[in-house]
Length: 128
Image (cartoon, rainbow, N blue to C red; front, side):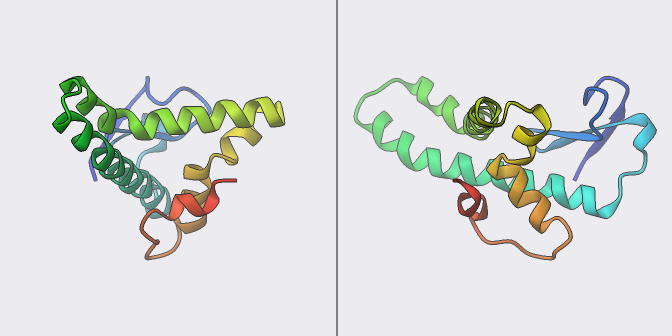
C-alpha cells in the first residue's frame, strides 16, 4: 500500500486518510504502524466492494440504454455511503467524534485492524 507523507492531508487531528487506495499521512506520524496500515487497507477493500456491488447495478442500466455517466457511481459509491453514514449519525448523536466512530465502515475497520482477516462485505454487519 502506497503511503504519501505530507503536511496537508489529512487535516490536523487525524493521522491518515485513504483516497482511492492511496494513503495520505501527516509527516509527523512517519512511519505508520502496522495496525493503522491494516485499518487503511480495510478501507481500500471496502472501496473495492462498494464499487463491485454498484457495478452489478450500473451495468444492466447501461445495457438498457441509460447514460454511460452511471459508470462514475462505482468510483464514488464508498464515499457517498461514508458521508451519508456520517451525516445521519451526526444528526442522531450531535457529536462529530461519536458520529465518526459509529460509521459502519469505521466500526469494521477498527474491529478488524489488529486481525489477519475479515469477511467479504463485513461492513454491512455494522449497519444499524
